Every structure is written in C-alpha cells, then in structure tokens.
Length: 272
Image (cartoon, rainbow, N blue to C red; front, top):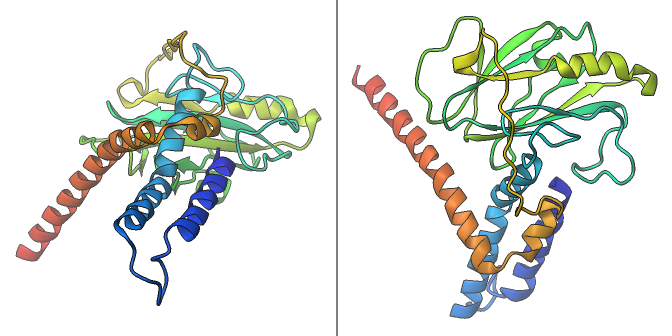
C-alpha cells in the first residue's frame, strides 16, 4: 500500500513540474488553466494518504473472519508464516518477523488493546491514523515486554477511563495497527503464534468481561481482489474527489472540534 502511494505521489509531482509552468522563481504568470491544473494536482497529492487508507481498509476488512492479512473491523489478523516474494501488501516485508494487522473504527467508542508478556521477545505495534501518520508504537522499545492494556481513543470520545489502562489518543477515528513480532526462523513459529494470539482487541464497554468478536458481513458485490493502488488508478477524477471530500470532511470535522476544544482550554487558562 505505502509503496503504491509513493509511486503515485512521485507521478503527480512530476505532472505539476511539467504541466504547471507558473511554479518557480522568475517563471511567467500562470494562465487560469495552468493554475487550475496545479491546484488539482496538489489536491490529489494532499488526498492520496486518506483515499489509499480508506481503500486499503475496505479490502482488508471484507471478510467474515480473520484470514491471512484480512480481518473484520476491530479484529486482528495474524500471518502464520514468513511472506514469500509475491507478498505486496506492505513495503519490503520483513523476513524475520510475523505480521499482525487490525483496522479500528473508533466512532462509537474506544478500543482496548491487550498485549501478552512476550518474555523478552521483541515486538512492536505501530498505529497509523487515517493520514498514515504513526501516532503511537507500543512495543518492546517503548513500553517493555510485560503484559499491558492500552485504550485507543478517537478524537470525538468523551468519558472516564478505567484505572490501569494507558490511553493512546488517535487524531482520527480510523486506525491501522500493523504489528511485527520477532521470529527466529521457521522453527520459531509456534511461540510467536502464542504471542500473536495474545494480541486482543475489545470495545471499552466490554473490557474485563467475556467478549466474542462479531462476524464480518462481506458484500458479495464488493471487489476484494483488486489491490487498493489499482482501484485508485482506475478512479475517475469525479470519484476520486468525491471520495476525498467525504473522507476529509469526516476527519476535518474532528480536527476542528479538537482545535476548538484546545482554544477554549487556552482561553480558560489565560482568564485565571
């Protein structure tokens, strides 16, 4: 996914250089058409991460139960073996770790992530927001190897958190966890599988009690075989910008609420 974004970003940047001659010191003034082209290309570059993340999420959650690198929303998918040369889902896939992947929807409530004691085995669970920015990375280097519980909180949620949960604030309601667990060759698969199965996700309202993740409900008409980057390439301009507008409005609305809350807090602090 990220490899495809880099290629597309380079392509549209090159388009700006070739098709928008008004860029650069001393260049002649742009015509209206050239200015429109530059603005449109810049909008494509701006929106690539958001649109690609949405397409990737839809492909990776279109299953009834976890399988390979796909799982229903708010559930982990764990790869049981090293990826082969045909694996293209992430850039330069590791051959010394096994992957764990989960897409989260924090719209309704936070999600609790529980990790087991890995007994010194290195792991990391980087979390991407909807713009593909990493906002938290629980793991050996940052939080240690002991069993821990984290609560991933979206930008719109308000409420009290139970004691003992470390909050991780996501800037967006869409989150991608792309975890890796150290694996010392194929003979080491079994203990790594134990660690992977210890990565748990439950809604905050279900934390501390028995919880069975619901099954996914795949749409038979949905095309889950075409890679996200190919779907992006096939989008018409109208479809791309409609998709970007919809996604950007959701995330921008959350951003505006956070900004207003921050400004209100700053004003209260100054008035003291």
